[in-house]
Length: 122
Length: 270
Image (tube, rainbow over the protein chains, first blue to last red):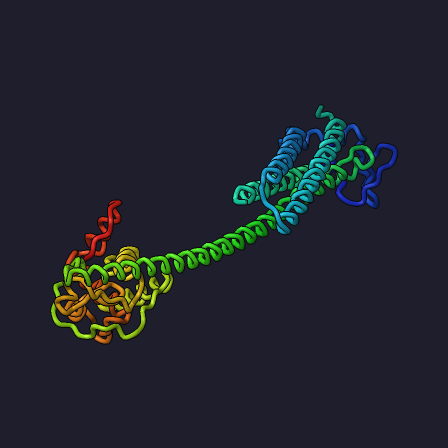
């Protein structure tokens, strides 16, 4: 049984002691952190997840473009009255939500990048 | 507003796609990395944080998509409200215009009648003979009531009623042309069901043109339908007038006056 098998085996009740993974109550299964990182690297590569960072960048760009498009559409409309005022408030709310989405995507990108870097994918 | 609706609709779809793609990435990562490895690397690699942040971004994109979708529905409701209000205003405007046009036509008709009466007084006879059918017989030389000028909406209602009776009596709907009949009525009687022409050749022959479509008595009697036998009744008059016109000219569009106006010319009697 190789390192991956060891890790899969250690599905429940693991504890982390001084860089060793120990399965409580049973035979001790040990793997060091570097081994687990190599395993993580292998899983990510096998699952074809190498492009996740690029995908997240593209999605953030897409969300940003959408925000701009909606702003342009709202600015370009000639509409007045109470319903129009209500709509403009909603439109600003959607743009704010899109800004938050872009921020969430940036944050996810940065965290995934950290995880990938640690797994040695970069 | 239509382009705004398209932008919002497109935006909702784009946000939904972003959400879907993020959910796919999240699921792939969760499925691909064994939980034991995630737990084993706790504190070393922020895998749990990755999952959480991807899930949060997925939710955010989904919320945007739903919000834009709701906005689109609101915009659509607003648009249909505006369209309905616009149609109502247009209908009111049309009714007012038709009423004014009917008043103007009535005034013109009255003036014309006055001039003709004056001319008749000067030279006993000499009508213009532009009315339907050949003259013979036909009683009721006096209309049963005062001149009554209807607006276009009312006339259209009479035409519709007459068309329904005609269809029930075998006249195909394709042969019934409301615009053509309206045109004839406009020129023949200005929408007055009690109109009577007392000065033309038919009148001199003792059978004046009468009613909405100015049919002479003989023509009316030949083309009226049972139960619709009052020449001054607007619906009855249209029924007989249309039957006569289709019988003589093949269709309403073929009536010389209708044809002439449709070709940019002036109306001529039928």
